[in-house]
Image (cartoon, rainbow, N blue to C red; front, side, top):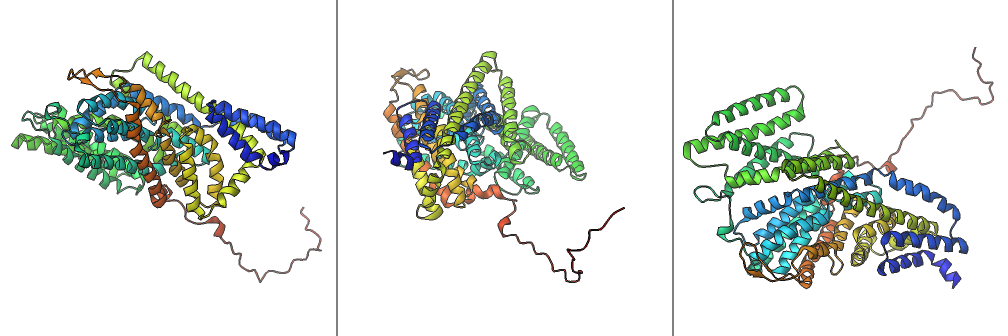
Amino acid sequence: MIAFIIENMAPIMFASLVVFLLLGYPAAFSLAAVGLIYALAGIELGQFHPDFLQALPERVYGVMNNDTLLAIPFFTFMGLILERSGMAEDLLDTIGQLFGTVRGGLAYAVIFVGALLAATTGVVAASVISMGLISLPIMLRYGYDRRVASGVIAASGTLAQIIPPSLVLIVMADQLGRSVGDMYEGAFIPGLVLSGLYAFYIFLVSVIYPKATPGLPAEAIGFREASGARGVWQLGILVVFSGFVGYMLMSQTKVNGGADFVILTMSVGVTVSFLCAVFNRIFGTRFWYLSVISFAVLAAAWYYFNHHGHENWALLLAALSAGAFYAVVAALIEKVTGFRLVTLMAEQTTFVMVPPLLLIFLVLGTIFIGVATPTEGGAMGAVGALILGGMKRRLSFDLIRQAVESTAKLSAFVVFILLGARVFSLTFYGVSGHIWVEHMLTSLPGGQIGFLIFVNAFVFVLAFFLDFFELAFIIIPLLGPAAEKLGIDLIWFGVILGVNMQTSFMHPPFGFALFYLRSVAPKESFIDRLTGQRTDPVTTGQIYWGAVPFVVIQVIMVALVITFPGMVMHYKKGMSTVDPNKVKIEVPALDNLPPVDFNAAPPTFK
């Protein structure tokens, strides 16, 4: 028996940890306890050298001294401030009105706002709870199927796990020893594709089961013109014009592809549409000549800066000039024909969308173009969230205190798990567990594809019982070295696992997103405050069944990222493609030099 334990101490140690976690013990204490118990047992059996424990204080200090992990409290604080400042409520109301009578319009709005909140908050709990409180009563009021409504809210909230600035990607990059900026850039496009798959599922449901996703009734739609028109297609013209200007301006710069190109193009387009709406709101047709003067001044400033080597200022001024030009055209058309090119819907949508989009650029744009590190980007995002909260006049001392307390709790939770993981990994490495894992994984049939299929199936099953942080701190350090030895790009590998681990928030019955939604969904029938009618509650079974299709979509997304690695690999653009292992340095023969006499006396210097 002793011989068997000595021979298989690493797998026994891992199995013991799984048992502790399944019994419900806290992850941080389970990790530390298993590590210390097996360290003592290993010393007794001669399988673990006591000197390993001398490295423990240095590992603990390394956790405290990790600048990368400092981004976690910044992004958490930013997300909590935005969630309490009412930004989600404004977005959901405006985007829901925008889709109007389209079947599934509210569900599309939830997905769109979920992606936008994910790119500004990075916190799953904040996104799910916000949309559950705001959207679920409205969707129930207008007859949405409870499974569809609960599923789309929970799934859209989990987009905060894969769309930057995700806390998950910060931890993933830290555990894999890779740049957080590269991980963010690699995950950006897969996150958008996943949002598109969610929307496509809602489209299929609206076609096959139209009663499950009804559109809003005409009387519930606001932001109309005096003539009663909604002016949605005028908004479409503004979006197309802004996007075209953004694309044309960015194509003239050194940024030529990838997530940073998308972010910066979007930022330029937002600047164009925002300035157009501002000029139209301030000057309109009455003072149209002031719009013309502003356009002339901005265009002259662009010409000056563009011809004196100030490319960045010229880019901004070109965007402002384009926005002013559109405002001039809109004012002249309205003055001559009476037709409004910038409608109330266009103005409202622009003013609601601009703050979160500018915050996205402030955080992600500065990271992608190399101006700021993720920690610095998080700090700027936290300040930006405070500014937005102040602008909405919803910032109070109690709100800040609650956000700080929640941030401190989550940060302490992460650090304690990481400390426990350090103790566990120290012992696990001491008993050669990393060698056991590496040999087991690299010997799988099928090479890289066989490895990826096995690992993703393994993580998918573990996600039924463990949350992301437990998976990241226990499993990722064991999988990373084996993936690197097989020649797998670790950013690509991290994004694949990030999408896979997203299912840990959606798995019935332990998914945290389902618990968050359950906490805010009505458990008993209630009287709707607007219609005065009694509405049935949302059952736990309906929430679980609603999550199942979205878990399937997430699995499909894992397969897509594996099949099309270019979705992630675009982060490598501009990098050297030379393999340093294949570089050869040839020294030319020197035939004309005299022979060297090694027996001669050395020269003397005076």
